[in-house]
Amino acid sequence: MRANEYIEINKGSIKFLSEIKKVIADLLPLRKDKIATDAYYEKFLMNDWRYERHKNDIQYYQLNGDVTDKPTYQEIDGAINHHNAKDFRNQLFEVVQSDQSFGYLFFQLGVEKNRTSSFHKNHPVQCVPDTIKIMKAISKYRDDYPKDNLDDFLNDSFNYDQYNILTENSVFQPNETSKILGFFNNAFCIYDNIRCLKNKPTQANSFCEQYGFEDDLQKFWILSFVIQTINCFESEDEQLVRCKKEIEKIAKALEKTLYQVQRSAQFKIVKFTYQQARGQKLIISVLSTAFLNLVSLKMKIKMQ
Image (cartoon, rainbow, N blue to C red; front, top):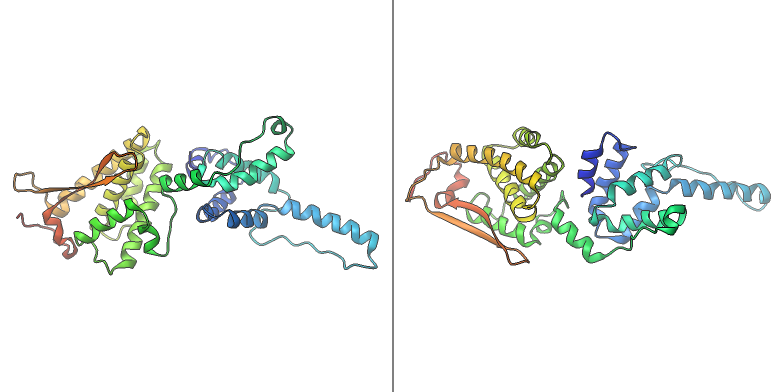
């Protein structure tokens, strides 16, 4: 289970909820980088250890004040208070222990458990980080957003195929990089939130309806992207598939409004497929040849 999904399901019982959310958000973009994760951990989550060192420094000063300056202690801005730091790390351990993308963070938390817990000294936490598993989890979870550079999204086969669909059908022009970047950031934000609401399909529907889309055209294409992302990466999650069906209701209604889809022999269907590593082809999008003029925002289309 991803950390954000755990938080949503258990938010009523999680200690330090707002701080936990902030730390998870801070660490999401650092998950691929062990050095950056360790640096964040030591700076923001270890104030109790820093405070203990300060007390030792005070004792040394009291014994040797004539040869050393009096030590001072100051909490780091944004760090967890030293009174709460240990309990906070224990709670953070519960939040991320099933999220394989946080392998480097879990290693730090697990090592502490093994060192300080009498139970875990005899039943050690298996926490040695596996870089390959971490990278695969991040790729599958697709919650590595927002990004500031479109190419960071396009360095991925699935995203690039979707980019091609959008540009080849003139939803966006290739030079509209800021708009396309916004498309991906919004799409993955919705995908992330829908997974956190997956046991509440009606709320997932409401979330999509109330999301701040620029217009119905953007709404249609972003929701279509979310649908295909679920198809490709989470098709075996029954709860999420129910949410997908709720989103499909919205997308189908928009399609009828935007394009007045006519089911006739003249309506040519084009299927775009994405080849997954396991060799299974999945339909990414179903588009009509009339969609080639989407950029003009025509509300009626001419059938070829």
